[in-house]
Structure formats: C-alpha cells, structure tokens
Picture (tube, rainbow, N blue to C red):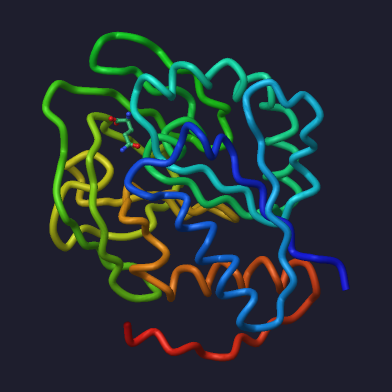
Length: 226
Ligand code: GLN
C-alpha cells in the first residue's frame, strides 16, 4: 500500500515552541496503527517540490524575521500549493504558517509578507502581542495551547473558524474566533505544540487524510492518559 505522505515546510525556520513536535505526533500515531508514513521537507530554494504529491502539508509558526525571509520562496510555490489545496490535500498550519496561507501579513513594523491566497484571510500586526495559555471549543472538543502573536487575523466571509474562544485571544482578540477550518485546511494560533496536547485533533487529521487516500479509515484508540 502506498505510504501516507506529509510535507513539512521550512522545518528549520517555522518551529516556534517545538511546533515540529506536531509532525512527530502524526508519525507516532500513524506508526501505532500500522499506517506507513513518509515525511519530506520543503526548504527555501527547493524548486522541485510538487505539493500535489502530499496528503498533508504542514507549516509551523515563526517570528516575523523568519516569515520575511521565507515569504518570497513561499510565494514562488503558490501555484503548486493552490493545486494541492484544490485537489484535496489537507493542511495543518500554525500561527506564522497559518498567517502566510492567507492574502498577507502586515507586521507591526510595517513590512508586508505576501501570502499564497489559499485562504481568504488577512493579518495585521500590532505593537501589543497576544500571549498566554489559551483554550477554545471546537466540534471535536476543547483544544488547549499557548499563543504568542502580534498578528490579528480576520477571516473572510464564509470562512469558518476552527473554534470559539474559551480563554485567551485567538484570531484577533475581538470576535471570539480561533483559527480556521475551511474545506481541507486547519489553521490555529495554538503552539505547545498543539497535537501532543490535543490528540483528538491529530487523529481527526490522520483519519481524514487516510480516508481521502484509501477510501476508509478506522483508527484504533490509543492510550492518551499521559
Ligand atoms: N510572527 C507572527 C506574529 O507575531 C507569528 C508568530 C508565531 O508564529 N507565534 O504574529
């Protein structure tokens, strides 16, 4: 059977607060169920990446500095990323990576980082950062994490958030929304990283990707007591 394929974008630049742990958790939880998984990387300058070849594309969070450095490379991949999105590839995007999948991120210092326009959302930086442990409610239960961002994200009309804030700021500290769940995309401001703390989200993503690839999916429950 063909392996499930994950593309980890810019692992050396988008890895705030251990965000790469999300890929480790996906790998571990697949391995425990006997699902073969292959993780590839996209780094700045990799011209050959064909984004349509992957089942899940993952982007972690990063500081404004890193976002500015990689923005040009990301935009150069825009067409292939869009093709992958349209063909049903799943996306998990954290904080800085989430912001760049929208139209743009304007930093508090006034620098525009162009996004790839996959999602109808924009992000404006402000001097006051939104920092702290937070929690939000989703259709698959409560999600906990840690947020630290200057960007305020505003979703376009018809774009659904991932959840509603219980505690903390989320997308913008104003409208009570957090992240995005639109078609095959999942975006969140939750670091920590998010998947080890919220294994139900990891399994949702795995089951959707497996179902999409092989037609059906039943995941054995794992012991998540720890
Ligand atoms: N640099 C972005 C911001 O401050 C994203 C930060 C992050 O990924 N935590 O809004």
